Amino acid sequence: MTWYPPYPLFLVQCEGTRVRDADGHWYEDMIANYGALAHGHNHPALVAAVTGQMTRGTAPGGPVPLQYEHAERLRALNPSLERLRYCNSGTEATMWAVRTARAYTGRDLVVKIDGGYHGTHDWGQVNAFFAPQRTAPARLAGLPEIRPAAGVALSTAGDIVAIPYNDLPAAATVLRGLGEQIAAVVVEPVLGVGGGVPSAPGYLAGLRRLTREAGALLVFDECATLRLGPWQVKHGVIPDLTTHSKIVGGGLPLGVFGGREDVMALFDPSRPHPVHHAGAFGGNSLSLAAGSAALDHFGTDEIAHLDFLGDRLRAGLDAAAASVGVAGRSVGEGGLSYFHFGSTPPRDAADTARLRAGRAELRSLLHLSLLNAGFLTAPHGLLCQHVPTAPESVDALVDAYGNALHDLRPY
Ligand code: PMP
Image 1: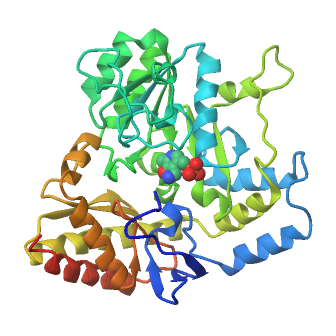
Image 2 (image 1 turned 90 degrees about the horizontal axis):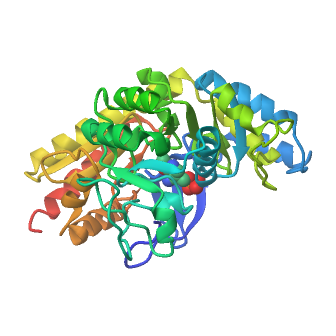
Image 3 (image 1 turned 90 degrees about the vertical axis):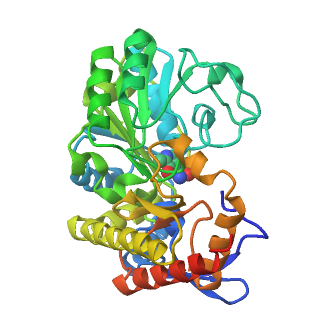
């Protein structure tokens, strides 16, 4: 959600890690287009790649060698992508991953995390943290009720089972109770919109075991967590399918889904009933050119730098809150951080909702204070670093937080 009261800034110029609004104010950009812009704005290599590609063609309506060049770079980061396909966004990537899992298993049910965000398609907008228009009972007692967003059919929502994040017993109940009907479990390795909650040690390995037992596919939505290395490489838990977006397009729209070769073989057009994949702009040349240039500048050093900045930011924010006597905690992993009011970090989306309840005005004032201090942050608390961010910029943001929290103590 990019709207916030009283009205959002309109951004007219972007340079490196900074953006300028229509009134001429410059801000240090701590949103990085919700994690997509790891390289900052207008990185020279990306500008050269995109302008060069403009002269050779944008989207010719057929396969282009750029797809192989990009895929090789991405597979170097994430080897579990034995086969991969291109689309335009994270929304499309997760939509395709679930369709692939349904085609592979011949099953319809999808298990998602309560408060998990996977984009704007219909199944993704069920239990996706937003206020629902209506609700339906869960399939099994004790699970979160089903909450489709406004405009999503209850029939679509009926194919979704929502489980609380970081709750392996709940996952075991579902996968053992409904296992033969479940096509996929879809999970973010760090629960993003649901509060920046890292997965607890052993949680995703547990889901790996349970999905294997149930014959369901495990899908990691690593649209946001590629900046961690991606997560699966850093932590050594390998899903059947993965989705990527954001950084992979170098600032242009691009989505990727892929994984096990035998599963992705369903798209082979010489098979009797292949999965039909189309899209006029999926894997277009401009996005691939930008994405390849981005991935050329996104390796071990850049990821380590983001990790370093993220650790520094979270430690600094916790110390700043403590020093002014405000109950506030940072959470997250690597260059993906969140700040919450409250003394206990959230473990799942229900915790996040409890921490946010009754604090909308406080959070809004914090956001506006940071804007006044020259930092563009996400209103819901997300903070992302860019690779070119200097440690001093992180320290300056921490100081701005400290000052804002000090001023907000009366609230
Ligand atoms: N999955 C995750 C984990 C995301 O963070 C996002 C974007 N915030 C999406 C999917 C959707 O991606 P897009 O906005 O490109 O459709």
